[in-house]
Image 1: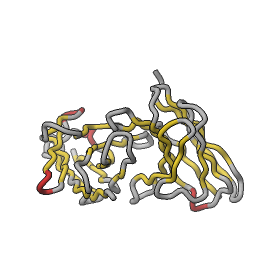
Image 2 (image 1 turned 45 degrees about the horizontal axis):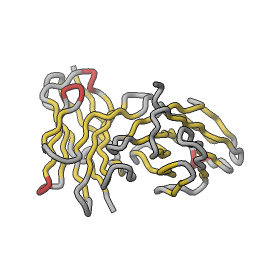
Image 3 (image 1 turned 135 degrees about the vertical axis):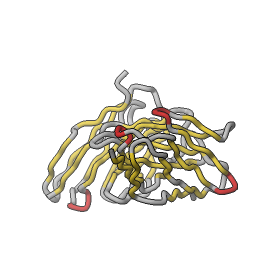
Length: 111
Length: 113
């Protein structure tokens, strides 16, 4: 039981490049979410999903896309990277009791 | 809409001293409340949670928190700090299971020898 896994752990992009951050969970959780963490701002919700085929926007969705074709996977796409997207990104899945389980994070730098 | 306020972005205590990290919430419905801990370069780990029932909740590593509806608070305490408690702590609120979590901005705890 690996929990929530994220790849890659580190990534450097140039402005304008696109990429996909991968997230997978093996706990059969319906609810999954993506956050970004910036100093002094806590965790801010980017997008979330309440089940396969269903996604919705969070607090800071601009510049990011998501899809949920399976229960296990919830990738986050950066369409055209900008320096403002330099951050640490966390994926999480939620049990039926509401507690969220977090992945180890992806540290992204956009130059 | 829900919100969380964590008073004090940095807290410093001596080893063996009481740890008190403050969290106040705003919610239009009875909340579910959580405390998470984040060690350097790691993801967040659940410390404890309140959903319903007993208002004093015990978590891992000797931490506990008390839900006080009248004060809209959910402060985190530990009687005696260890060096290993140095980390960042986040309070979070949601209105139900399967709903979005709203996080506070975090409190970084330093423990002095």
